[in-house]
Length: 569
Image (tube, rainbow, N blue to C red; front, side, top):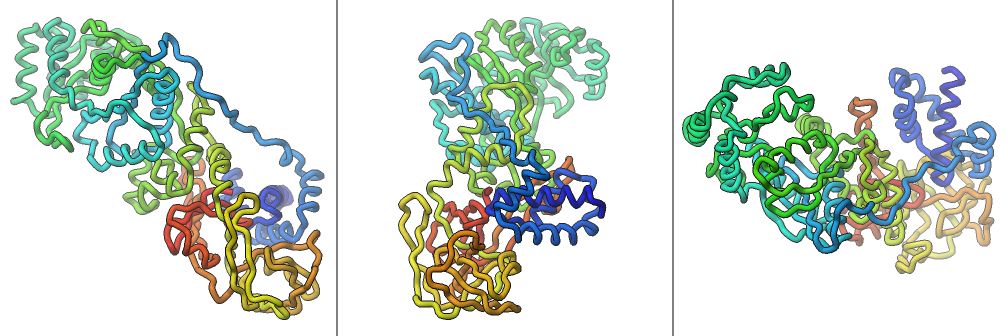
């Protein structure tokens, strides 16, 4: 291996060790190397041995020596990281009047809610709150082919978890008869027509900016076509189109669809309706009818602003103020159903609550707090700039919420046995939190403990180590099993500090460690680590869902009696 690669590995190992109390791991360094230097993927077998050797070398250095080497060779690592500024609230709304602002969040129940939904819901709810107005939750359920009660329920559960309260809850399909009324109004005004052209011909005409023969039909013929859509025509044989402008540069305006036939059963209305409004038509009518004053959408809908205003102008209906914001995604964590669904079907991720995903269920299960999501989203503001945030941007907000309430527990990975001789007590009391008053727990100890293999590899006869909360041990024997003598009044500074678990009561759990799901658009096969670790029996007394900080490892959430999920450092 050339010196440049070795230098890059050492840089990553030093950075990670220095940020985590002097210790790093082979897998972490490998994952970070592959994430930042994808060209190394083809050289994994070549570099894995060197990574192990370099990690061992770095772990043997004191924090002071690690910092010194970083200062000399990699000073850029010590520069302050760019932080997302926390703002107080959102920017003022154009034309807003106190007490009269009405916003809405209109999710389509065609998938599980994710961080992008959270952004839209929080922005709309927050603006209503800022101006003492109302926020409406409107399930946009007018595509029975894609929508299910399962998704409807998941959206509701996710919004409840986020703590968002709505003044009105409704479904777009509540107003089907009103849509028909407005559709007929457009037809009778000559502003809409029934088109029976084939889909490929419609698409080609729109590309070539050519009107089709259907657009020449008179009002009587279009009324007949409208009636046939409810009884005679099959799906795909007829649609209602808005008479826009086939020459328009904005392709959205080239006679878009207002209604189409869908014979799938609706998840609440069954087979009551078969002619369904398009998104553009439904959102225009609903926003006006519901009294929405300010309608916010993600910026991919910005070109539809012209169409929505045109529909409302033709119907003489009130137009809301429209504004747009960027979509929110995390780097390497796509939110697209087109990408996520195959991962689940192929078994690459377990379900929509898999902790590697950006869905609300997954974030909650991972240990991300709803309050942190809200603070993070409000810190981004109402920007239209693409927001592909690193996940650690959210982590920094979450850390403020979990740190104060997270019990500290010891945990060891790949345990080695250590026998302690001359131990003068059979139990100790350990505080549950280093600062806050969260009580203490008693740990029974008979002299036989487990320590992590990373710590064990640095033990040599004659040296002293400090077992956290217990005291100093002078190592006397190093082999497959280790021995040492308890030392009264041992040194506390410049000594290796390690965690431990009583061997007799050690509780084994599986610890899931989620990593970045995609690296350069390629699925990361190593995106979920499963560690078999041991922790204190006190873990069993904690409630499911409780947040823990495993000492010198990071924050984790108790998923079950036998499994925990790594949240973040």
